[in-house]
Length: 149
Image (cartoon, rainbow, N blue to C red; front, side, top):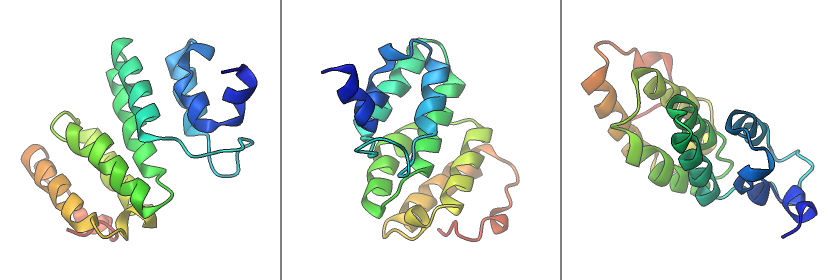
């Protein structure tokens, strides 16, 4: 695979951490990718996201890694992508998220109709709410009108 091939595909570019060599800069670059980016293909697979996450964890960048997962979930552009990203990026780590990260999950859901309008949203949100109730004494869910459970 050539550098030109990598640079034309957002998924390859996301996976190619070795080109940046700085996980913080790499994650910053990936989070800036959107459908208007200069890539021929702007879709980023869940697997590439997980690889970047693992790399950040191995670099002892736990907070950066979890924020990255949550923000990539928040960037889901289709219902089925939101479903896949919830199942692979959020649900397995619910018990590991800090209070701040749980709040960020709710904020990301509340601000993206591809997440909060999907068929599986209420079921997923209920799991999130259960975890929040376990670790946060008072959480005002009414501030997030699109977060329904």
